[in-house]
Image (cartoon, rainbow over all chains, first blue to last red; front, top):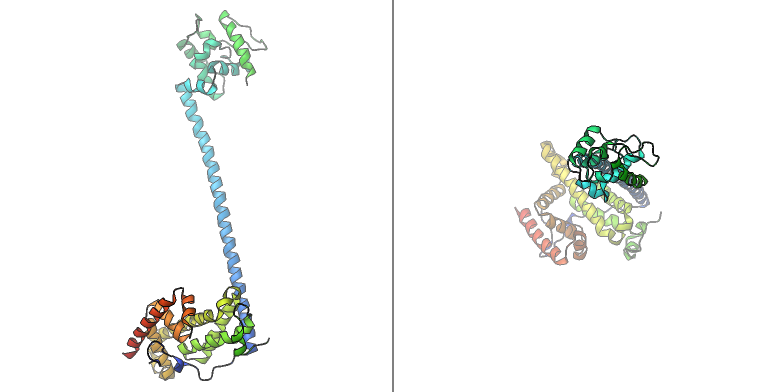
Length: 197
Length: 168
């Protein structure tokens, strides 16, 4: 097989149909209907692919949101336990967090509850770790803790440091009268602390 | 539906033309390149109509260069058909003795396809569009997406390789 022409302009005209057919109106009708069919099919495919992409994006977004939500919960949970343990181990961060003598504030929490045994913690309990260790759990102080704390810390001039944390706080309601003179300064403190939630 | 003549269709500006107005030109060009490659009237007609239908289905984006676009689609469809035909011939040796292969026109096409298949893709596209599709260098460059100089280079190299292959 060769192609005609020489040089840069060859010609394949010898391969042409000598009598090319004429495409009449019927051919145009067929072509148009076929073209409409192709267009419809392409639009369906485009719509389907768009729908799939949107579903994938929404699904991914929902998954990410759920993952973030669960991770946030986990963060809260994990943040709680170290705080409680650290407060048990070292009460100093608790005092820094509260911004005030932590012992007073936390013992006043007990002051709102008349049954709280450490509620009567006065200024002598400001440096008492027993009061600090009780508050994170939000539960009434345990007697062993308070006893140990009271025995361990007593910077106050009070000669009997143990009752400062162990004895119930005289609240504003005055349900329980102060049993000892050492409690008397704690009455004012606890009263001011009771105002704080 | 009114079908305009070739001369009327050629006089219409491509950007303003409707599909019905340029349909004769599109079918003529698509049929020519398909027949040159295939040598089969019916198959070339089918390919020309399929190329025009594809042009109609995306007329809004094709109307500016509908003619070279149709030529390219028709040439691709014809080359696909030739490839399938060659594969069938290789698969079934009985076809070698059939009347179809005794036809020199068909033999010419198969030789041409075999030679084209050995060319690099760019050279093959350029030769088919430029010489079998009778497109201008600018139209070929626009379709392929390269410069006119590159089209000239690919065309000359492709023709040289084609001559060498067909001379064997």
